[in-house]
Image 1 (cartoon, rainbow, N blue to C red):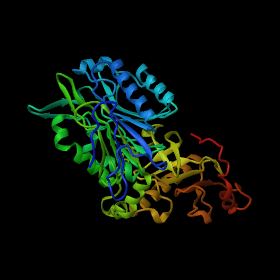
Image 2: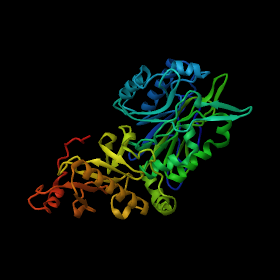
Image 3: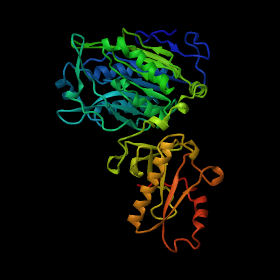
Image 4: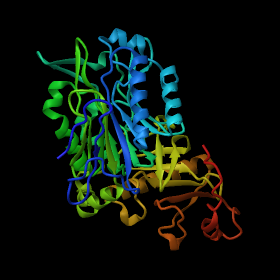
Length: 453
């Protein structure tokens, strides 16, 4: 059904056709599909040696036509104890990530760096997933939420929380890449389906990533079944780059880097023995077909159990530029957002008609019309409109506001994302009070303006 990749240099193209999965060895890629490379590593405690190994494999991946490469958790190093880890951790602006930025740019290759030992202080680090684009720019970062504190006598004993700080925020909006929208998570997060559902429901992710260094006992028992479950329930591609083999006297990883399609089929497997590369196709037409034929997201009973949305983004003090908010195909940075609720957010208007012109929008990607919203989303949206209205009344000293929705192209909507205009009104702001609706028809035509903060 699928073939494991063994050492670096041995390359098998894992691809598929509908309905048959019997694809010729090294079949030629269709131009409508994108090739990815999943790098399986057996890192030790020497960061430079590990980097050189990754560099060699990434260069090979590029030669084979990959446009996006995925590295596992702990791609930088694995030490024997927390003392070594703390002494060798770097900041994101340190020399190692700088080298990966240069490498991504020189290879013209998007990189997922699956779990970096990010130095916070002398006593603690973060386990951080980074995306570096093909221009060598850091475009997304996520800090692992769930820490692996597990003691199975005689088999596994790890206490990640002794030296790792848990993340404080849900994953950012997916990276909008040439292969689709890539959502971030790390290793042990795999056991908590809420993150995968959040990335699918709130952000319509196409690819979910689970870079890992799974232990052998837990890998043998749960690795593949968990990854296939996340793919099936979200109807996303799942990419899981993994560590493999013995790292030191205390640590061994399970291997089996996997790529799984939205139907739950394993389409690439890195095997159990050695580091190397496995290749797979990401086919967004296939993804669309799976979702259309079994529209499980439309069948969810959100009226009973709601959407999985960001609890963390509930107040102004917690919003920062790590968050990108969907506005159709546009992303709005946290610095332009006034506040966010569980399912909606309020931002400044790029092209305001009046001072204080705000927008309130659903967080969910694909919420284009009022008819697209669930009951809970509608309730949240209009509670957010009320909150925005109260802020404007207090700040501008007004008692009147215009609240308007242009629901549809013929109504004047120019962005395919439902949004509510809230404008503070004062006597004499327009010659005729209803002239404001004429202004709304053409206020956002200056596309070269930058978003205000």
